Image (cartoon, rainbow, N blue to C red; front, side, top):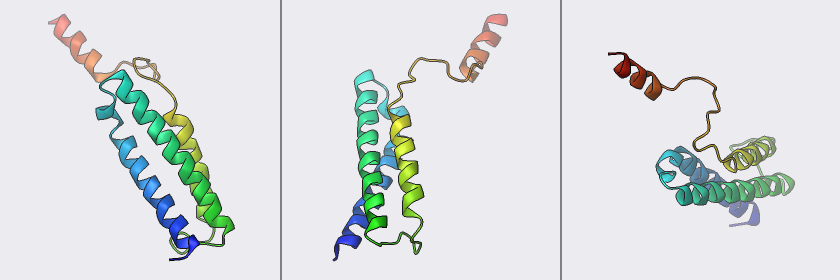
Length: 110
């Protein structure tokens, strides 16, 4: 296995694992320490994946048959890493009422 294949496999593996962690963030956020650990893990994995994807592009490798796919995915990984570092637990970021509050209000009206 040459260096390009190793870089490709590791970067795709890190992207896949961070995606699974991102999907599982609700479960991992049951405690504040679990949420912080999950966020930092996602941030580190996405950052490492972005570096490897940039390296893959500059080594002349391709991703899914496209030479130009690695750089946009690297930028996306950086964006996900930055958003993973945001701590939004307990903060109203939508400015709208959530379904649980609607159900609670309906129960109180009855």
